Image (cartoon, rainbow, N blue to C red; front, side, top):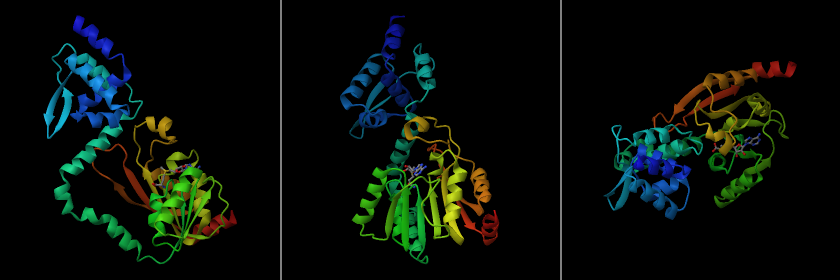
Length: 307
Ligand SMILES: C[S@@+](CC[C@H](N)C(=O)[O-])C[C@H]1O[C@@H](n2cnc3c(N)ncnc32)[C@H](O)[C@@H]1O
């Protein structure tokens, strides 16, 4: 009884509860726990010592690191605490961060094999193939800090990078300047209403921005309006997921989309789109993306003009 009371008292602390749940899921070292829960190392060490003193977790040395893992199983009287910790709402998005950490760890463990795979050179391949494209006028919808924008500007004639965040645009601009790219203009605007001329772009790229907006039809309609006849639209989005924390923490408006629903929304604004691919396919990340490629058909242009 005394043990249970002590354990309940110790787990009244929400950070300790999160740590128990994380360590209960995978063996972790202190720096990994620090990176996951986002509190100081001294505080994490204190929580781990407390959980260890209750007999809930154990400590072991491996490869120069001290790792923590669950010390009890279903037969222990303390097991209901582990179960409750596991069932508590994941308001901090710990599950997703842990999945990402395990994926990175896995990357290191299998680096040797991966070095021999063509996957290591996908980025080079993508850049090389893009360099074979004709010079295109590109509009990047929701460019953020410009990671993708800079890659587009390497081969495009011109890139207009749009975002509502001035701070993000500043970073995108600096990234382009550092790489010596001068064919990029940044524009602070709302994606649903853009001060850009109709029929002026060869390619509209909408990468992971739709899940931030309430009215995706309005954004896709703006994309379609900007395209020249025969112009292309690329939409990269997340598949449906259950990580509800992204709404409050990251401002997402949608927990991903079914590709067919985005495809139908593109069709409504005159873009004939096909599903290009879905990835990554590994089970470890809750965020999987899909890519739709579409073309603004001349037929749809006539229809839109007459409307
Ligand atoms: C997840 S980031 C995507 C960054 C980049 N496109 C990529 O794929 O890495 C989404 C960006 O869309 C921007 N955004 C969201 N809603 C917007 C809106 N209504 N108007 C303009 N920008 C918006 C956000 O500020 C954010 O920088």
